[in-house]
Image (cartoon, rainbow, N blue to C red):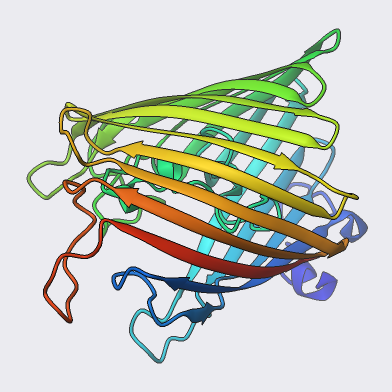
Length: 353
C-alpha cells in the first residue's frame, strides 16, 4: 500500500510538500453476509443469501492539522455482467482541517450528520440490529419520502467543548441539495439554492446523550418541479446503565406541505459482554393528513460477538401496515394486493478489521 500511495505523491516542483508518515495511515473495513426470508411476496418469500457490504475505510493524516478520510463500498456483491448487479459507492471522501477542538472543517462528500445512525448508515459492525431503523432513515421504504439526503457534498464545520463533566458537540454544513435520481449530488445541484443543516449533541453524564438535528433545502421531484421546499427536524435520546441500553428518536419532515413523521424506541441488555438481546418498536406516518397509511415494525433479535472482530445477528420483524400505505402494492404473480401484515426473518454475520 505504501508503494501505491507513494506513486501518487508529487516528486518535485515549486513550493514545498509534506511527507506522509505511512506508519500513521490506517486501513479498516468490514464484510457481511445476510439471509432474509419474508412472508410478503413483494420482498423475499423464497429466502436468499445477500452479500451486502464489502467496505474499506482509509484515514490519511498529512500533518497535525490536515487529514484525508475515505470510505469505498462494494454493495450487493458487485457483478457488472448482470443488470442491477450491485454498486461501487464512495460513501465519504473529504479533507479535514483541524484548527482546534472547537473549530474543524471538512471539505468534500460525507454522510449527512442527522440523528444517531446516518453517519454509520451501512456500518453493520457498529449497530446491534440487522439494519438501522427504516423509519426516519429510510422513510421512502415505508410509504413516505426520504427525510433528508443520505449524503451531502459541501463544507462542514464542527467542534467539541467540555464544560466540567458535560461534553457538547456541534456540526453544521452547507452543500448540494436533493437532485433528481439521474443527477449526481456530488457533482451538480438541480437548483441554485444550497441545502444546510446540522446537529447539536450534549452528553451531560457518561453514557447519556441528547441531540437535535435539522435539515433545510429544496428537493427536485421532477423535471418541472426542481425546487420543492424540504425541512426536517429530529430529536434523539440515548442512555445506558450497566449492561442496559436505551435509544429513542423522533423526526418530522415537510416536503412541499406534506408532513411525515417517524419514531422508534430500542432497548437492549448485554450478557457477559458477548450476547445482547434487543427489542425495537418503529412507527411511521407517511402523511399526517391522511388516515390509515401508517406502518409499524416490531423487532426482536439477538447480537452475538464470540470474537472481537466477528458478530452474528438474528432477528424476527413483525410488520403492520395501514390499507392506505402506498408501499403495499400488488403481487405481480397474482395481481392481488400484497398483505398488509407480514413477518421477516433475518440473519447476518459480519467480520470487521
